[in-house]
Structure formats: structure tokens, C-alpha cells
Length: 381
Image (cartoon, rainbow, N blue to C red; front, side, top):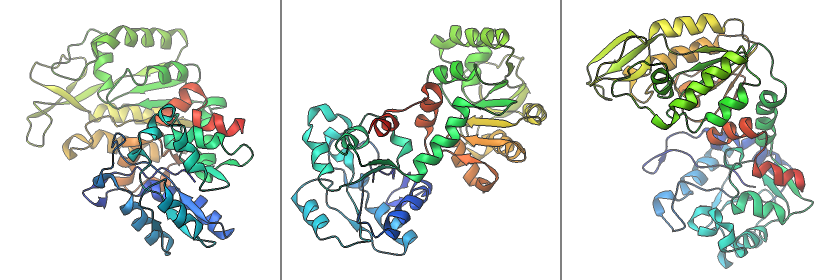
């Protein structure tokens, strides 16, 4: 079973075990059927070399605590020692293979086609429950699945992700609003253009907003701006007007002399130019109030990306207030992975959202394209 245990770490401690918990439904199902379960995952970017700091051992330990049963940690993900461990397995045993990316062929299957074959040798049914990694054509996602022509399945987490994100792609409830934050316009252009065919309103916050504000002729001081995306931002305004999609940018901004707790901080209207030496770090209170009112009639909301520098408490107020505003709606509320999910978890509001996606990049790509390599290969099998 391919899972996504690429969890954030603080040294040797897991900082957030959401992804491990998200895989429990599929894991427990296999164990109830008395299956022998071999789990595989990647962690970080070791670039094809063994790196003890990126071992999956802490994940084996955490999974063992959650399941209240032993989870054996394999010394590698392929090789004789691993095959012997698998041969000795009893029904309901679990082995977690070591980080797949310790082998270059995981990310570059063409460099060694035998890598996927060696992984496939370990099992006789393949389950992909790693939605968050399924936008990548890696060995454990696409190549292994091809080696199980009639026994490649989606896990329960994968099924849930496709159901909720598929509702955005195919049949959103109206009025349908999208809130997009985070750093870059460039990574979200495809998603925005695809969403414009489906949404009734678009809210833009986070560092992305400064590229849009600059496109409207507003000076943004030292804020992050993608100069090469300014014409694209103008084009998105134009498309919104043509399609009668309502468009919201921040009305007021929190600006700071630097991104630190000790910075000089001011709040000002967005239309007032940000002075040099200052940069935008959050949306202001008027923006939140206005957005909150505008979202009241929503039947469906998709939110991806914080609207401020969420890691610093002083600049996280906008994101926290937005999370509370969206949580209070009676709409279908879908959050697209990454930092927005972390924000909601920190506020202990996970149960107030319809679906929190485990995949940031994967959820955006699925909404943009309507399919992913890891899903396509399962469908074809």
C-alpha cells in the first residue's frame, strides 16, 4: 500500500501526524481481512541517497502507537533482507518500508526499471492511498501499479479525496466561491483559469494579492511581487468581468517593516500605496468583515492558502479570522491541503469543515486538470 507519510518533523519528533491518521481507515480494513500489509512512502528530498534524518522510523513508531500493535521497520525498501522480512510475515503483520526516495529510481523510474519490479515482488495486491503524491509519475505511484494489471486499487482516503475534489471539478453547488492565498500566482494560474468556468466569486489574499494590487497600479513597497505575472493578473481581472465572476482583493492590509515579531506594524487601506521599506504581511480587519459578509450566501467554498504570514502569530490574525468565518457557514467547505489545513488544525476547527484535503499540490492539480497520473493508472488497470 502506497501511503503518504511525508510528515513535518521537529528533529526526530513528528510535528504533525495528520497524514498518518488519514491512512488508518485503509490500514485497519486490510488488517481486519487478515491481510499482510506492506506500507511504502517517501519522506523529504534525500535526492536518491540514504539520509538518516529522513528515515521513516518515527512514522513506524507513531503508527504503532495509533494502531496499538507493532509495526516493523524495514532496513530498506528493496533487497534480500526486505524480501526475507516479508516472507516471514503472518496475517495482520505490518511492515513499513524505508524511505523510497533513498533510491534515485523512485523519482526517476526510467533510470532503473528494475526498482519498481523489486517493489512489486513484495506483494500481490497494490493499493494507492497516497492522494497527496499522486500528481507525480514516480515508481511507487505509476510504475508499480502497472505491474498489478487486475489488482490495483484506490484506498479509502484516495476515494474520499476524489469524491470531494471531484464535486468541484464536475458539479459544484452554487453559489460557489474560491479563496486563494499563499505565495505565488505562477503556481495557481492554471487552477484560477479552470475555476473561472465554475465559480461565482474569487477572493485573493496572501502574497499573491500584491501582484494583483500592482497590476491595478497600486504601489506595494517591498511586498513579494511576481513581475512576470502582472499581465496574467490583468488578464484574470478581465476574464472575471467577462464571466460576471465577482472578484475580491483585500480592502485593507497589515504592513510591516520586516517579517519578524519585532517589526514595526501598521494597518492601512489597500488602495493607499505601501511605502518603501514596508511589505504586506496580512489582510486587515475590514477585509475579513467584508469577505465574511460576502460569503454568507455560499453553498460551496474551496479555500487554498493562508492570507497572511501565518507562521508569525502577529501576522496570522487574518487567516485565523477567515478560518472562523468559513467554519461558521452552512455550506460545503473544502480546504485544499498545505498551510490552510495547518491553520485550521492549530485552531482546533477540523470538525467544522466538510473536507480537509491531504494534498496541497495534488488537490490544485486535480482541480486544474480533472485527473492525476496516480489516478489514471488505477483507472486503466
